[in-house]
Image (cartoon, rainbow, N blue to C red; front, side):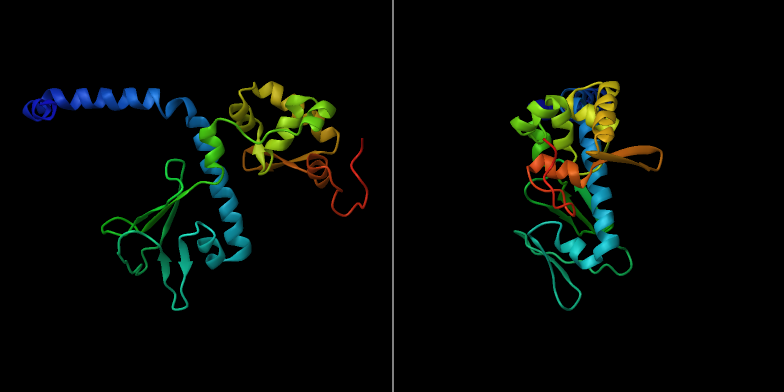
Length: 221
């Protein structure tokens, strides 16, 4: 009944559907979109670095357990249906997504570009609404928020990204990161127009309660 009404009046249906889609966007993806965008950008940065360091084959086979590489130069993806596509110079688009998990999606039908849509790294934490938890002892030593930020730096991140992820102001995050950097627990480097922070070996050792690589000494207490 509803479908028949919509089909019978296209002039009214288009704005109605447009408003429904806009409302869905506002209610569902929009509140988390800054974090989703951060997650996708981080995935692209990490996998681009892996491609430069290790080459194409490990990069592709490391995308997902369903992806394998055959000796004759064929990429095979385990799926419920059979389909194939010769690239023929068209290239293969690798597209991280926050909305496909745990499976991946393969686009092979022309005229679209061949595409592998794969789960972005860390997508499970995104929808659970929290990042890595700081160890209780470390929180007592550094303070809960400093420890939380140190634990969140599994991959380099900017001040704004960390602020969005943890519901903090950029100024607060910047002050805590400065304290961590002055303590030798994080470093910072410019990436394009942004500044990214990363854990130092000492910061990693302190987080996991072990020795800093190359020092042979336990972290300070």
